[in-house]
Image 1 (spheres, rainbow, N blue to C red):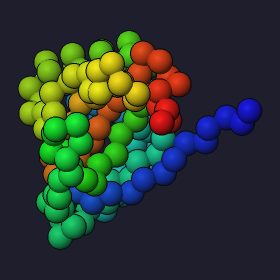
Image 2: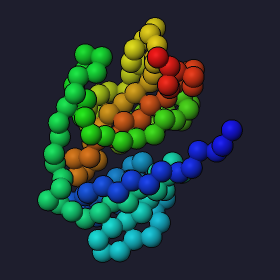
Image 3: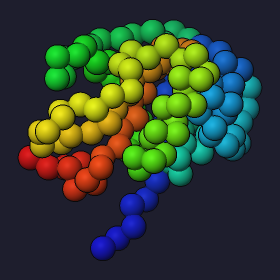
Length: 140
């Protein structure tokens, strides 16, 4: 079995200092290289790059999932249940406004998962998930 390699995701922001505070302080992501146009973050072992591109920010379409309207374009990480709970508490304590409050979705069904959705300061949607049974990640 091979080890999963980190992914790389570049995304637009309209304020690098707000991105630095949100991804660095609020989410606890270590900052890597940066310039006056972009910042690298260690996003739970993956490489995120926030690019200053204000004209690309703020486009939000939604899709219905399990009776909730969720942002169609979003990214995030699947955490352990323990780490998910720690992050949910950290975000609640920081005053984050959730698009979908931390909760268990698909309860008692295939794919049961803890999930939460929220936006970064530039309007990019993030979803963090966790599974009591990790085999449910790709279950049909």
